[in-house]
Structure formats: C-alpha cells, structure tokens
Image 1 (cartoon, helix red, strand yellow):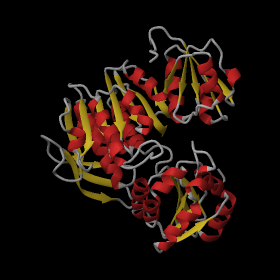
Image 2 (cartoon, helix red, strand yellow; image 1 turned 90 degrees about the horizontal axis):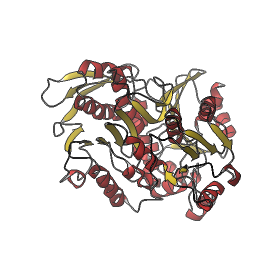
Image 3 (tube, helix red, strand yellow; image 1 turned 120 degrees about the vertical axis):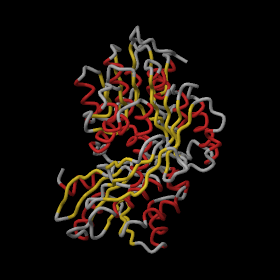
Image 4 (tube, one colour; image 1 turned 180 degrees about the vertical axis):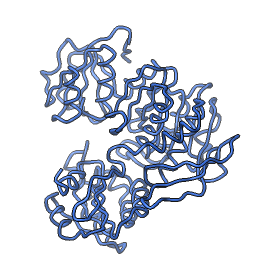
Length: 463
C-alpha cells in the first residue's frame, strides 16, 4: 500500500472530492501543505468551499484530468472501475488509496485517535464527542459525516493530539483505521450489496474491535446481541453502556420537556447518579450520549464540562433538523434511511407537538429496500400518513430496481397492508402539490432519507 509521508507533502487527487468525507480529508491535507485537487460530478457548497481555499476542482470526471504530476489518487467506494479517472490512474500507474486507507494513515499522526462505528448514530455520536473535546479546550481535529454548526462544516482542523472520526463498515473501510479509543454503537443488517449477511457484518465489527491496542479502550453498547462474540478475549479495556444496570454506563428516569427534548439520570462507575439534559430529540440520542460521556471520562474531562457541551449540542444538519413552518405546518428533515433509524426518528417525533405526523420517505438503494422491505414498512407505520418518492439509487445502476422487482410502489403496498395511509408519486412536484393540499395547521411533516428528499421541504418553504 502507498504510504503518505506527512513530513514531505505531495500532490493528492481526490476522485469524488465533493463527498462529505472526501471533502473534509481534502481540506485537512491542504492545510497540511499538500497540493490537493480533485473532481466531482457537479458544483456544491462543499466544492465551493474547497475552491475558496485554493484547491482545484474539476466538474465532470474525465481521463484528461489525470496527469503525471499526481503522486497519489484517492477513491471512494462509490467510484466504479469503469470510471474514466479510475481507468486513467491505473493506466498511468499512479499510486492510489481508498478513502478508508487515507483516513487510517491520517490517524497515525495523532496520539489519541477516536473512531466511532456502528450501523446507526455515527455522525451524531462523533459530533457529541467533538463538542465535548472542544468544550474542554482540547483543540481536537474532527471529521464527521454531517455539517456541525459549531464547526461551520464537517471538518475541524485542530492542533492537538486528539482526532475524532466516523468509522464506516461499508466495504470494510474501518478496518484500515488505527484507533486508540473505539466505539461500537450497534450492529445490524445493512449494506447487503457488500456484506453476505448479519454474521458477515458481525465478523467485520469483531475485526474492528481487534484493531484496538492493549492500552486502548472499546466502548460498546451492551444491547448488541451475543456481545461476547465481539468483545471476548480482546487485549484492550472494554467499557459498556446501555439502558439498564447490566452496563457500566446506563440511563434511567428519561423524561421529555414540552418540545420533546430528553433529560435523564446517568449512572456510571464510582460516581453518584447525575442529571443530564439534551437539545436533540429521541431516546436513541440518550444512548448516543452515554457513549460520548464514557469517552469524556476516559480523557478525564470534568463532568460539568461534559454536561454543558452535551446540553449545548443542537444536532447536525439532516438529523431531526427543524427547517421551518408553512401555514402552521412544522417541517423537519432527517437522514434516516434504515428501518431502525426510521423507528428512532418517528418515535422521537411522537414527543414533538403535532396533530398529524406526515412522513415523506425516499428509499435509498434498491438492494437495501429489497432486503429490508417488511422492516421498512413496519417502521413507517409509526407515522400517521406516509408519502413515498421513487427509490434513490445512489451508487446502484437504475436498471437494478427492475431486475430485483423492487420499487416504491411495492413498499407502498406493504405499508397499506399494515393499515397505514400511504401515497406514492413519481415526482417531487406531485408530492409537493399533494402536501400543500392535505397538510393542515399543527401537522408535523418529516422529509426522510439519504438522497435529495430534503428538497421537498425546502421547496415548500421557499428556501
């Protein structure tokens, strides 16, 4: 594998530089003195920011963008082997790295790299840990998969020995990391276009846990089934968190205020119970905060600093994000695109003031929708009324839906069979027209999914 020498910066080219994670890594290397350039399909706020920093961005991925002046190319898992830049890089024998391999090499430059993994909750928990470290004036470097208001983006370049990053299991990219502190939030079926099954996914998380050194620590949710398969025989310290006294860190007496924000009593080793309150919705975020508190305790951060930072954290973009209101209808946007995430978000919405809960859902990838179809249907019944957009294919070819026999209409029938009102429209314009006619004052409207479904709410609000 090509090794980057951070003492001798070279020319790095990012294929897909506008991606949320690639964008942050490009900015980090640029700040470290590397000559950074890259390409993406289209202009965005993220690429505008890179260009403002002097980074060259090509729009459209073409072979002629690749020159012999490039010392190393970085690819995401979304880049296919028929991509013209991928072909040109290999024809020129230019060394290349995956995004995960580059992230791992960056981690080696920090004394305390903290990697947050799990099927769900990585961005929120990484952001919570980052907020706590910033609140403690530890000047961390932070790379998250969302836009964090306190950082003004998805990357913060600090000057200390602390590095906080998400660790995604897709294509086993997190197995290229070098964490000192690791978190496993949950392990569930997902990314079944890569993994064989849940057992295959669990094997990857076990390998991730084994990356931790003897003087490191794994923080893990003890609600994960057969947790000993993940933690048994590890050389590092293992700290658990959960919802009851079987865990080292656990919460009780969870309550919600009039706007649905939770408060709880924390129990932890060697301490008296302490009260915490959050400004993000849902019991799943109480769980996420327990993992973040455990990290803070490992780093000897005073509890009052931790409590203040968590109370001040108001979420990242697209995580139960308030977008505005129109005609007395509150519009929320959320990134949830897995049945467990949908369940958590809609349960959180139940504590938010509303009359009727509308969910506009855009399924994400054909393989995920096909493999988890009945789970999606069950989760979406937590809304009073559901509106479906077409499946967002992401990295999958448009023809795959037909070959798999999966579409939003198939999901619609499953939801209707469970007794929940569900509508399908093939265009955003039709969805917006339907919502304007049918949503009334005091209704709560959530746009949900990992694609571009947020545009529906923004269009309704005139943003």
